[in-house]
Image (tube, rainbow, N blue to C red; front, side, top):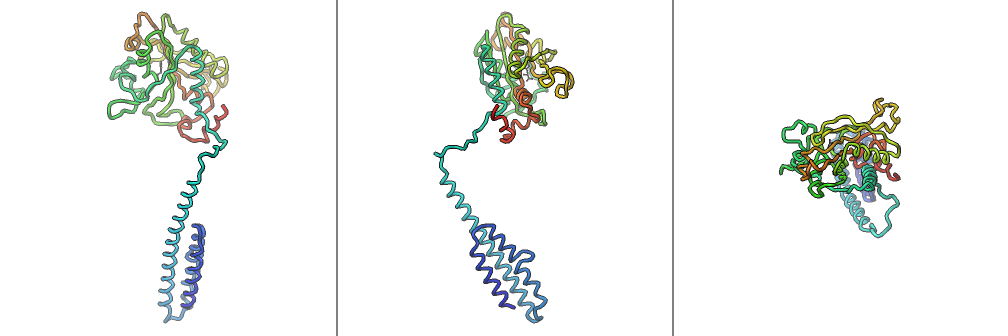
Length: 342
Ligand code: PHE
């Protein structure tokens, strides 16, 4: 009987030496130590062994079992190292001068919509401004006629930094700096990433994009605002868009409005997308409040202006039929890939 153990040991040693990769080792492990493995089955033969040899036989099989398990663990380590080395060596042969694959990247849907809107406004004489993402209480709220403890602050909870600065909750945070930079008259749009302390779902994100627009001059009125919005939206949606204004409250505009557009899906007849109303809410806007003009160094007796806050993220969702806002920040290339040819 003990010669049987010896023979099995020799056979195992020979086979394990020949193993060249992890799969081969796993096969050997199953073949010898698995439920129906050769070593495991030896133990089953214990009942045929004469009584006086039973103890020694059992001990020897267990020794072989341990020997095989140790040897396998050792071999696994050796092969793992060899496989890693192979990987590193193959990485070294990666040739950066080879032409890249044909699969090129694509613009993010928000970038696509942003550029389109920028182009339309640029053609109407608006400049495109950049603004920071981290700003302070003054620019985000105070300069916009939202004093501390004003209830309107509740609508825009944000993330605060240890030094007292905050992540801007709306692109309106740039109004003051842009007024101070250019003075009146002025026409500018400023796209930007905004942040709010929100729980996310298919329609809400803590990070989203807006495009603010501002026009300040002598005798600017609500009709100018309606004209520019209607023109821009008709070009973005490539169809004639009707707009309507409803009263809306924002401390930095007076009067303030919610601008709705005729539903782009049903054309205004009523469908599930517009909750059968025929209208979609798109863009808060209004005539800039005299206090905001004053804070920006512009005389409200001489100049008036309008401002609007277009939801770029929302516009991109409507334009491309994106159903879940979270797809846009997910970095999921499969979700974003489909806009490649837009
Ligand atoms: N900043 C406002 C918001 O994000 C929108 C807005 C912009 C309203 C400009 C009026 C004028 O809610």
